[in-house]
Amino acid sequence: MAQLRTSLPLLLVLSLALTARAVAASPPALSLAKTIPNPHPEDGDQFGYSVALVGTNIGAGEQARALRIALTGGAIAFVITETIGLVAAIWPEAWLGLFGDDMRIIETGSAYLRVVGPAYGFFGLGLALYFASQGAGRLFWPLLSGFFRLIIAIGGGWILLRLTGSLNWLFAALSLALVVYGVSLVAAIRSGAWFGKDRVHIPQAHK
Image (tube, rainbow, N blue to C red; front, side):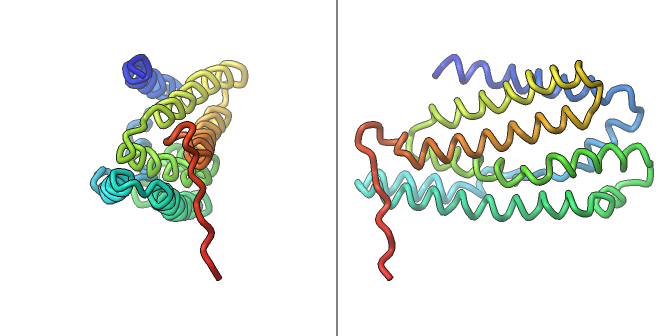
């Protein structure tokens, strides 16, 4: 666990460096960065309710309810961030045009949004479950999933960029990394990773 905690910041820096290197040849690269919509809220307090609700229910022995709260919150986060991503992917020029009319910015930004935008929902899902896992006091799987995400983004992005020289393939690696992050985390939590051998089944609602 400690190794994962110390490795993630380093991998994040490497990921940013890889992307920066790929776009450094373009003079408006810094301007482009300001135009990319953020798929998650800047303020972590948006997820504070999930942390509190999950933690309270686990403390009260209501494990099934805590799991249901986490998965419901993750589903809501997925819908919101996926909607943002799809809108940005379908109409990238409408968003990018608010920040300038440089065709290089619009072209590169549009390519990014069309490839990565549809995967924003998986990042929102993973982020919501990360905060829920804080409430459960179980951060191994969120950290491991985040580690996998950065490995795919860095390793896959670097390999594809070297092989093709195309930013589109770099963006594809970033998109795949977000999907793996969200899917692996929801699969782990849904299967009972929070509770170890004491697997919890979510009761079905009665009709």
